[in-house]
Structure formats: C-alpha cells, structure tokens
Length: 326
Image 1 (tube, rainbow, N blue to C red):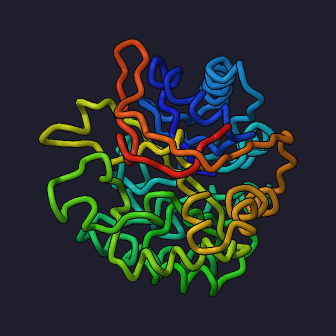
Image 2: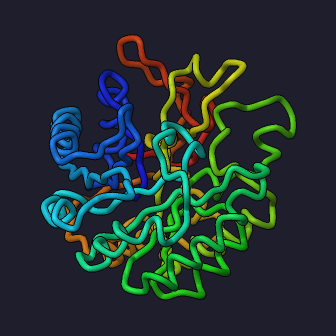
C-alpha cells in the first residue's frame, strides 16, 4: 500500500517485481513532473498496466497533493484514484513541488473537498529538521489534521518512531503503513560500520527501541496498520555516489523477508492480515483473488536487478533468506 514504480525503463524493470507476487499496490505520484492532472494520471496507469501485462495486478494510482484542487476536479477523478498523496516541500525524492506550508487553513480547501468525497489522504510526515527528529516534529501536524478533518482517513506513511505509534492509537481517523526496512534495520545498519547506501531511506531508520515498537505493532497485525513497502528504486550509480539518493528497493524480497520475520516470532497467523487484509478493510478494497505460496527453501538475493541500462540493487543483496516463493 505504498510503492514507487518510477517510469520508462525503470518502470519496466521494477513493476513486474511487484505484480508477480501482489494483487495490487498503491502507487506513488512523485514523478518528474508529478501526477497532478487526470490526463497524466490515466496515462501513467496505462503505462503501469502495460509493464505488468503478464500478471493479474491492479495499480491503485494516486495524485500529487495541490492546495488548490477544486471539489469539481476531485469529484471527476474520485473513481480513478485511491488517495491523494501529500509531500511537504523538499523532504524526499521529487518533492520539490510539494506543499510549502503545512498550515491547516492553507490546506483546508483541498482537504475539505476530499473529506466530503471520501478520498483518503496519504502523507509523507517529516519536517526538514534534524534527521532523527523529522518524523517526531511532524506529529503535531498529523494531530491538527486529525482534529480539523475528523471524517478524513489519514495515512501516516512509513512510520519509523515509537512516538508515531502513540499518536496513531489516539485518533480514530489515523492509520499507518510500515515498511520492511523499518522492521528489519536500525541506524547502525546504515552507518554503524561501512556506509550502506542501499539501506538509506527517508524517513531514516532509527533506534533499536523504535524498531522494537514497530515490530510489536506489525506482528500483532494491529487493525490500524498495514504493510506499505515504500520500495523506492534508484539507479545503482545514483545510490553509490557522493550524493546518494534516499530509497530502499524491496519489492522482490518483501514477502520472503516478512514471512521469515513473522515465523521467527511465532506470528505467521497474523502475516496475511498485516500484508493484505487490514489494507482491504481500511481502503474498502475488493482485490483480485491471488494466492502466493512460499516454501522453506534458501533464496539468495540477487546482487542487482537489470533491464537495459537500468540497474537496481535490492536490500540484502547477496544475502541468504530462508523462504522462497514457489
């Protein structure tokens, strides 16, 4: 329920890595330029469907938040989108046209229309403060949104801190996605030894106590949380450089890693709810029926995935997982 597919050859490389094992995904709109019109939205969805034509897969597309979307425009595209995605200005990849002010009154025209139309809001919840505090600093904004728009479903995307969990439980209209990397990693895995650019993401993975709190939430399949990979591919040479891009590519290994993680904690019975069932309920989805079988067989994560000139390095490249997709 949170996926980046990019475009062009990168789209052709990474989209099938999701479509062969998932029945659908919520697709992010932060292309260059971002998806802000109905024409761009439908054209992008068509390109995704073409890239995934060998699988049964539904791309649930989103549109990039603008403060001046009219009620009429949102009503016209309501049946074409699953949500609107809000990026604060400059906080992550391709967010340079994001919202420059998070003042509720600035956002109110679009959010009131969304609330009336029943369109969910997905939010990248970070400020531009100190890296480790950015999500925590954003929490008062989430709280203000929850209070001012009580009938608006608000998705706290890729939560990474224990403080976010406390707020999630406080308001009925707040929900959250959790990624593989925030369940598996801490900051030590990124910079504790040699720098690992392929584990660098935004929001940054944090302390062991944050990971533990997120893990408890996911393993219990809490009804307000769902798996959202935030799988975010970047060209190998834009990760392994002096200005490396933020984003972790996990699409081809997400199911294997989560199965291993839930098994280790004796919680396999909750895996399907976390990956799929909670999202179906929260978003009122009736997805394609698709069964994926995993077997207890070693799987070595490829060092790189390639298509034409595109090369993407996955999380845990070269490492062994104990589950495989049959």
